Amino acid sequence: MSLLTTTWTFAQEETYNFTLEEAIDFALENNYGAINADRDLLDARKQKWETIATGLPQIDGAVSYQNQLKQPVSLLPAELAGGEAGTFIPVVFGQPQTM
Image (tube, rainbow, N blue to C red; front, side, top):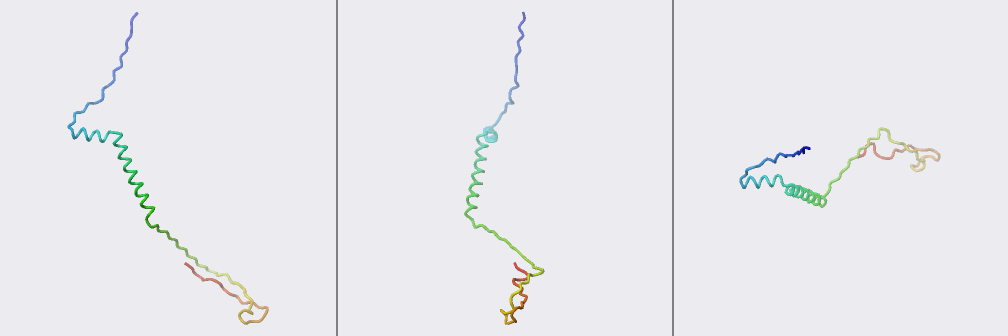
């Protein structure tokens, strides 16, 4: 009986030769803790500005314009204006254009 043995070989990760400064830069760029700390700083700055923005004056504005081409006419008793009883006078209320 023969024994078959199988060996698995894995490729080793690439080795690097760094100076001290290069090693520090590489560690800061590839360290997940440092990356997450940078993201936390960005989030904190954004939250700071959100908090500041809530204390700043808020500006809100609206503009409306109405142009009544044909204004409604109401009939009032003519007695109010010194006219005859039982007759009516046409009266227009409002402005033709409003802002």
